[in-house]
Length: 302
Image 1 (cartoon, helix red, strand yellow):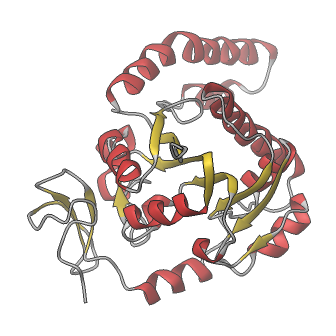
Image 2: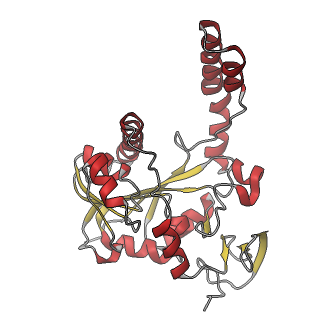
Image 3: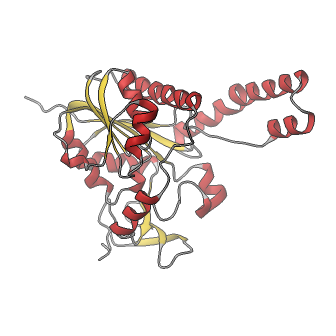
């Protein structure tokens, strides 16, 4: 039976934000704490059936160049957050929840962690082994032995019923001082304002929870973690595509003049347009595509 209280604050008053095509599902906002979520939550059976039958997230065939770049990008983000917050651990047992094809697992292994991935999609273990030689298993987080030195959870919390409880379980698996690093779609991102229920944030029926900077912070803190950072480091900042460069290439072909113009427009976008937009997103929590976070299991005072 559907729990009729907010999954974060347990409040009972909701305001409807979006109606979905499938009845009776709505995206609602808790009047008491502001948390936005899908109501009612779909059944566990429906969610599990969807997750196990869907394509493996991030798999586009055997394009080695693409995957190598993805591992380096994810590894750079992890390294940045470990360095920024002077992480206590730089090796040891690590887990990526919702591992997909194993990109974050491979990135953590490259940084010296003994990492595995957790994933319910039955095709993930074979793909992860073939692409990156990493181990991916279908196992619940609370079934692990604990004492993890790093836990990553990229684009997963939005899929999980009762995220505070999940964070609490994650905390129990972490060693004292260890970090949990992850990301979620930003409910206040530009995509939701432009596209509503067709946006990435509101993918139905699997994106159950909609996070803002405030509600993500509250979720992590109520789960017992110390929040170190929530923001928009690249490539999670504001992303705008106007189609000008693609139009130029299609209209005039790939000649030296067109390539030079496209390069100039790319530099203009990267160094002139994006910096003020990304500063605005970092400060306000608005417009950015995905919220990246780092949180820590605080050491217990002796």
